[in-house]
Amino acid sequence: METRNLRKERIGIVVSNKMDKSITVQIERRVKHPIYGKFVKKTNRFMAHDEINDCHIGDTVRIQETRPLSKNKCWRLVEIIERAK
Image (tube, rainbow, N blue to C red; front, side, top):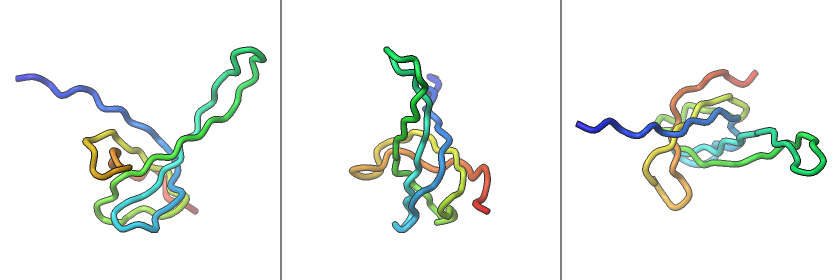
């Protein structure tokens, strides 16, 4: 029996939870500029599936890649690491 491929996981901050069973997670990474060498912050936003509408804006969460759930949504919530204060 074949094992499943490892799925990508990301840690980010919830920036929107206005949708039903969906959240928007912003992921920030630091990239070194190829010429000048300065580290620049790059951000990506992913829509993720939140089955029980448990997340709030500002929560730090772990999301995992999954099959496409809708046009824009192919990530799902794994756990809430830290609640917003």
